[in-house]
Image (cartoon, rainbow, N blue to C red):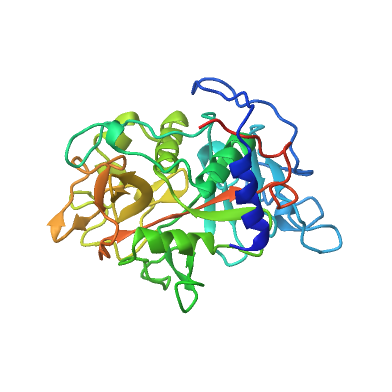
Length: 362
């Protein structure tokens, strides 16, 4: 992580007092003055909703073509707000500019991300009642003392959301662990690439933090359990999926051994089936199991279910998207991948912006 971002993480550990946070999922996000000055408005889902206003596609460059040092406040046709990192663009494809149905942004490397909005601050894990071996949520936890976790939670509390990879992670660039960078791009029969499997959660953490290291407006991260749960709750809240479809039986929208749309598709691809898309996110149910940073004792927790695991088939009625399955973190499994996340950094990129990131009581 570069020095600018490291300063952010250091400052977070010092912020320990004074916020008013929403403890109820039904409360509105507190209105705060955004430190992000640029604002653009979507023209709606007509295929021409690139949020430019004469200052470059996505509103992320200044009028003279220089890169902006701040993220861009994006307001869609419903009046909902998201923040677009500098040098990122809002997709100009129909159906990809509305926040409630999945705002898609495109990074400089072509990776695609979807904004997940939330009223829950601070973020927390949610009990969907789906456990591989029974049990309860009390045994599962995110490591809330980590500076990176605290930075993410504070960013979400202020900006009202985070980005999740639109696709399961694939190999992007890099030649060693120190500089590996994952991608969030489709991998299909017609679009080359390789899903990133046989990789430990510890290595995934490093790889995700390598994302866009020279961009002072955004930080890459490896998803925690609270991000996964918040994404599933967002699908339910927006009416895209029912509680039963995310927590009990995900067969209708996931690549499982018993679905009706992906015969013999054993998780080699991501983004291959429109049936496996929810609010513009692909393969959140089934396909490959996905590591998260959530812990169960010394094990890391897998989510999403998958087409198979360890040679056994996985039907969507037994392994729904909300499933929690702990596995030792040193396991490099061919059916387990991961998904990237991004959160917005304060406008000056240093974390020394108390109006932008308010402290969160954990």
